[in-house]
Amino acid sequence: MQALCQWDVQHDESPENLREFLAAHAEVAGNIAYAAELVESYWTRRKGIDRRIAEAATQWDLARISRVERNAMRVAVVEMMSERIPPKVALHEAMQIGDQFGGAESSRFINGVLDPILHQLRSDADAKDHTG
Image (cartoon, rainbow, N blue to C red; front, side, top):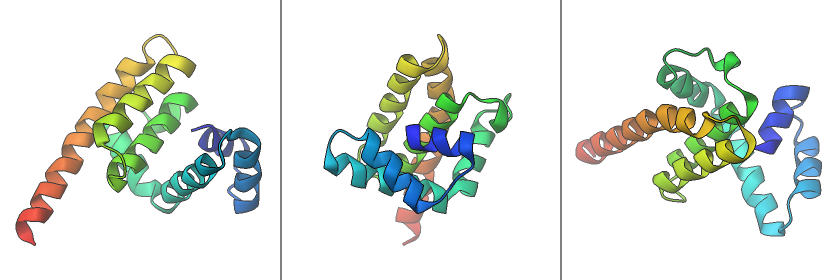
């Protein structure tokens, strides 16, 4: 989430800067690889992920959502789509980030946006399973 926030501020998507940032901020080496994977996965699918968030945040323009909330949700959607961790865990972690780094209503807002995305991803997966 912090790396995505940095990208939001600096508009610098270079892989070298990402690696430097993660090396300076990750306490555990394994976390660096996972964080880089999340950021790169977001970057590859950013238009679709941002579209999902914008559609679920019905009364908000994506650019007006705080950086913390926006990037916590981006990470959560990447994790939900990858299914590497249970989607509900990704949603809960995003809410915790909102509690820790966002405003008083951040976790509630994040939950309100991510819950419909989670349901849509599940519906998409169910439809895919039934069609082959």
